[in-house]
Length: 257
Image (cartoon, rainbow, N blue to C red; front, side, top):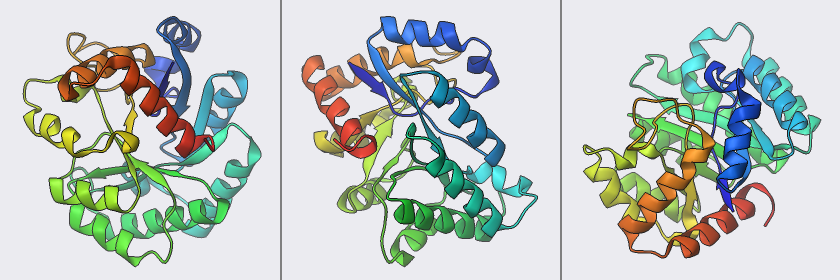
């Protein structure tokens, strides 16, 4: 009874074989898959896929790496995302949104767009899925500037212990991807032990970051079972206990309990 809380089903590698991908996920015990979007066009595709497949739910939002490609003003973006957020009961959040200084040099614009999408989530009463890479000071600045924060998930954790403790104190959920299984991921293995069980979520971030021993191949939702078993062993938790807890957490955040 797994829930993959972050899987890019509109990515070309998965979208071209979505029926087969979903079939393998069902066989692995994945009951729900949440597919975020990265751009406005991608958000429209997410709505279509979510409406077509019972187990697929969607998030609508603009990823920080896509902000440099915006060809319209922020108010238009916000209005279009608002329409999409209301267009289907299968849309359960705003995402993937956030900040990224590793690949982008437009941080001031990123902060503006990120904050607007956080405010939209508050307005719609929806949770958010947040991306953060090498932008901790800027992330703290935006979070601290908000009069009210939505509920949400920091996906594919890539921050410091200090930031991790802060986002948990703010009530956010946290998830780790298949890269926690990599030999070089000692820091992630240390940090996940800080996350309370009632704040932890499972995700694959498919088609990226396949876990060992499938590293180098395309990731997909069925691999959430590998990640779950690895994390359970790492935390010394019975696998069923961890599955039940993370599934309950995902239902609480994205499906109203």
